[in-house]
Length: 292
Ligand code: SF4
Image (cartoon, rainbow, N blue to C red; front, top):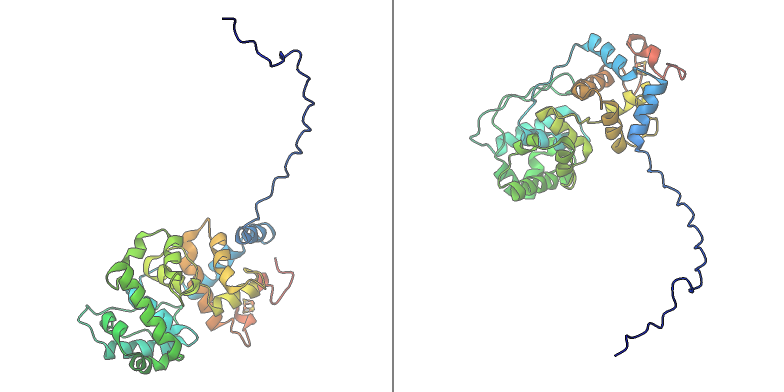
């Protein structure tokens, strides 16, 4: 049997395929710069040493700030919720009322308020029984925490927070957050409705010395006046601007928060800031728009 002959033309006799037009090289899309990193670089370039100078001068005035755990983390979180939109002193009254209405047999806790705290500091006392707070009738809880204001929002927020912690962790302890990476811990907390970056950062900074910067109204005002933050930076983004600015010195996060908040209360108040007493005035853009 003769071998089957191929009907395909040989390679030599096949017509040459016309060369494909070269594909235009694709334009590489530039990754969008992280606005917080971009801001920190800009500040370092055009106003070098601004944050370090500010902290050094405020430390001279108010004393060096050394981190100390302020309170048990669950108490800290609930106290911070109570401080939302009110003065710290009112939150203290509501927290003391919580202890009295829902007593526990836990060991007494000591409050280390530090210079950034606007109240008198809590008296020593056992934390509230969180299980009883979570299960309390809503109207009753609202009445207990009334000194802190907007109880209609805060009472359900406190109960939802305690419920979420217990459902996910089996009890109300938040000590596990100290074992997590700072941003992962912040994400865990901000997944609870009503807990924003500020409240989460307060807890993680004051209970675990994690380098997360809470930006409250005092920190925001002072920072924007000096020029540490862009004038129009939304408060939510300001937290991350500070993380970028403190990337090389995360150990200064605690003093940054405490000193700026204290300066905002003592000298750089919203109305009538006392520029003449301020050690940063030669670098402050509020008094000199061309300050270095
Ligand atoms: S100079 Fe005035 S505006 Fe600037 S930080 Fe000091 S008190 Fe505030």
